[in-house]
Image (spheres, rainbow, N blue to C red):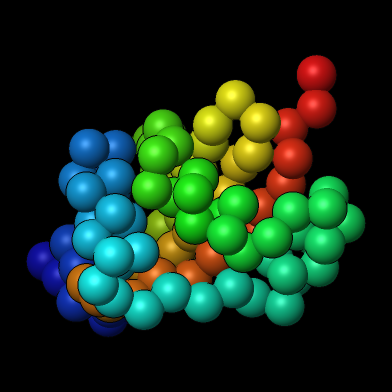
Length: 99
């Protein structure tokens, strides 16, 4: 059954990755104020964030604060997104991975 955002969530990692790539190419995406602050703290930009969304690995979704969240990561950066509709997503937070 579709949720309020028009998607049947949770999406598996493969479908989430496909949709994230589509949205970054043709849809709408936004960063929360928190995401902007976290990116700035780690000296990252929105371009870094989009690069992760386009090329990163999508982990299994998690239910948090009333929404499905998807972690997308590369070896250096992790980004957390939530879908608002089939054509919109929001970046909730992001950070540089330190080892």
